[in-house]
Image 1 (cartoon, one colour):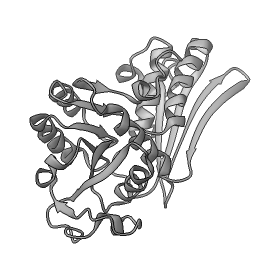
Image 2 (cartoon, helix red, strand yellow; image 1 turned 180 degrees about the vertical axis):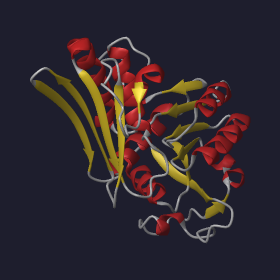
Image 3 (cartoon, rainbow, N blue to C red; image 1 turned 45 degrees about the vertical axis):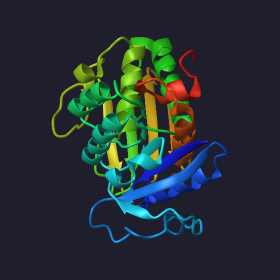
Amino acid sequence: MTNVIIAGAAGKMGRKVAAMVAAHPQLVYTAAFEAEGSPEIGRDAGEAAGLGANGVIIAEGLEAVIGQGDVIIDFTFHKATMEFARLAARHNRAMVIGTTGLTGEELAELKELARNFPCVQAPNMSICVNVLFKLVKKTAAILGDDYNIEIVEAHHNKKKDAPSGTALKLGEMAAEGVNRNLSEVGVYERNGIIGERRSEEIGIQSIRAADIVGEHTVYFAGPGERLELTHRAHSRDHFAKGAATAAAWIAGRKPGIYSMFDVLDLHDL
């Protein structure tokens, strides 16, 4: 059995993750924590998640519970995530990171830190979204340069980063399929007189509204036709389920950064 520590245990994703960990046959929910000053500190984590009391008391900060688990599951905020990763590296504790908005510098630091602990880091833990990543790359490669690629993502009005990490990954996969570099061809905002669209552009546009859990559509538009690949999230459950799957998989692995492609064995697709 793998003992799990949940970051942000009383938050929306923390509660979803708790339910999926509790339901997983290989995982045990052994520790939980919240940020300093949270009113949830001291509360039973099972009750906070609506699961009934489980005897796990929400602590203040990761350091208070780092010795009580094998894997930390984190869906918090990028700056907090990096603090957790530094602590995990010092204590050689595995991590599953679903936090989005990590900067290039933070990702580079995480790669270095992961020399000392195993880590699954992915912009999206959903099984279907990870299949979509592969489909987008294959579709881009098949259709080639004759088709314009555009990505539209929609999320709730509380989401702090844009574009979403999932949209950026979709852009990267599409770019790989047509031998481009997203950092060179990505266009993230169009306003005013922008001139004719360059054929190599990959556009990524963001919508923020109400309680949209998450929607991503990739358009491949050619002369007289277009293909749309869409994923719609109906709830956060599938993100949490993917994280629980990753937590069971990462336990006991060698140090390094892993993706959901590793967890789901999708590399050959």
